[in-house]
Image (cartoon, rainbow, N blue to C red; front, side, top):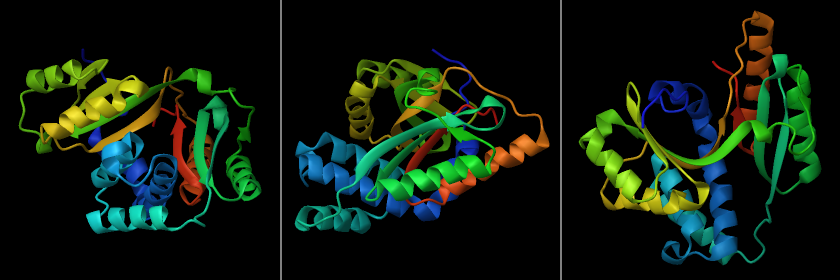
Length: 242
């Protein structure tokens, strides 16, 4: 149960996903609002909210910020309704891109996402046009420096909880689950006081695209930067082999 994952390297993850650190409060805040609206403000009775709280903690969002977000979402009857929309398309040289959004203005979001693709030489496709090239999976990444457990012991905890796969990378461990089993696996690790560098349901590419042309690389980075800067964008998945 091992093998190289382009997702599980901590240093690699920090470069792109955490480049948008300043935006994480907005992302988490909207996810909390949606989770509370759907299942109530009590994490004990709301597994989706528990997952969002775990994601917030993995991104070093302070507890008081999380609690304020929950109280605000629970106490505001006129709180904003966010629509969950997913866009699919292609970047330069056929790089597949999926964009998850939470928005209170569908027209604004659609225009901004299309603009980001266009400015980077890409185009937005129809629903399903690239998602078939990805597998939706729960993914938990654990920093080796933050984990004292023996790898075999950690693997058995994860597999006993329902994980599909476990791999050891240079500086991290990666646990893959079925999306439906993600919460129970994450909570089993949490019960063992295991720190998680990231824990989320994500889209993992089945194949990768290399960009050798400098202009294509600039265009791809342009698309990703514009999407990162958009507050409506919650997550971006792509199969560019950086």
